Length: 163
View (cartoon, rainbow, N blue to C red):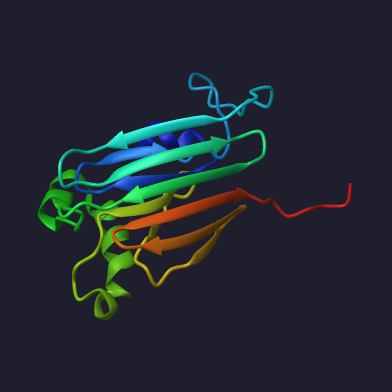
């Protein structure tokens, strides 16, 4: 995830496949890591991790500071703790364990393998259906759930200051 730590943004992770995508809520130069303000238009990214796995459709409106993510869960979209422990250092694995341990009773031990991540802090956020919103630093995140899917809207909403 080191590549993404340069960006002040929110991402989404498919844990079983370790696929990481930026929400496109803001636009950054990939080489310098600096935000690009002259970039107009929208972006759309479609990512599929295979049969029975999760898919993401990400629509970024970076000049407005808005992003939408549609997540479709497959039948294999449950965290595989063995795979995750092979991929992550103990400190990173602990973040995911902490995220889920608080909610173990609600999920009956079956957690979705998709979560949000704050690229700046490395904190992870559950997408289980009892979470309908988050305030992640300067980002307001709304989450609507359907059967085996989630629709996420992210707004870049820094505190307004009187100049």
